[in-house]
Amino acid sequence: MTTLTKGLNQRYLAVQAKLSESVAAAGRSVGSVQLLPVSKTFGIKAIEEAIACGMECFGENYVQEACEKIDYFKSVRPDLHLTWHFIGHLQSNKTRAVAERFDWVQTVDRLKIAQRLNDQRPQDMAPLNVLIEVHISGEESKSGADPKDLPALASEIIKLPHLRLRGLMAIPELVDTEEGKMKPLLEMRKLFDDLVSKGFKLDTLSMGMSQDMVEAVKAGSTMVRVGTAIFGPRDYGGKQS
Ligand SMILES: *Cc1c(COP(=O)(O)O)cnc(C)c1O
Image (cartoon, rainbow, N blue to C red; front, side, top):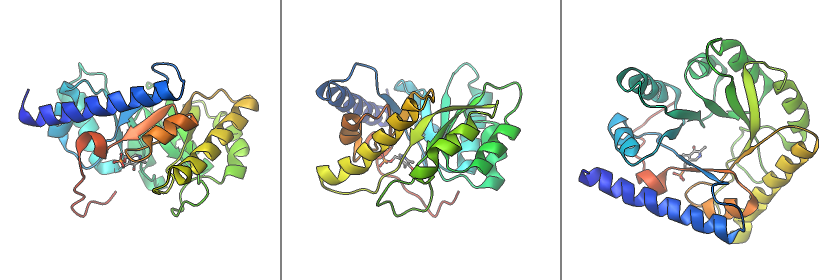
């Protein structure tokens, strides 16, 4: 192992250990929470190192940057079965590139985006797994569906044959207190349970990042998206989507 891989591997192992501990502490079953490493802003080299550490799924935010990475690994390492999750804000003029490459899109927040992804998903690919991004209370960003619109939006999305609705995702504001962290996470859990009780077949509640992973697991997350704690601090270098 190179020195770079060693540091990455140590952080990855530490995050896995912290995740297992919080899953156990929450009285939840082993393996009930998936760890999604978020590789945005990190290049091909870092992802190769990550793959050497055993990572096989990656979260990406910026369409062009992500497409370059996905295309690289598809052509250079077709033996690998990597899973790519789009977790950034998706503009409608960029849906095609995403529909043609990704396995998951976690940030569907309106029907128009879902319809475009459905129409642009190549017929020979498996249905695109999607999550509805929810605008949760206290969140400053404007993206995300309004909680009251979820049942109607979900009802429309499940009609789209090239998409598979798997659940919900949220990006709560970062706050310092345990209580402040728990509030939006518990709201998300409730919204998820409400949809399930209405008959939607959902299995994924994506919430929790480096700073609120433990709380998210406590609140019922099934997928935590972790960047900094695994890859280290990001250098955006003026990067745009
Ligand atoms: C960047 C990002 C993450 C990872 O954040 P960290 O704080 O670095 O763990 C998770 N989810 C989304 C949607 C992101 O944009």
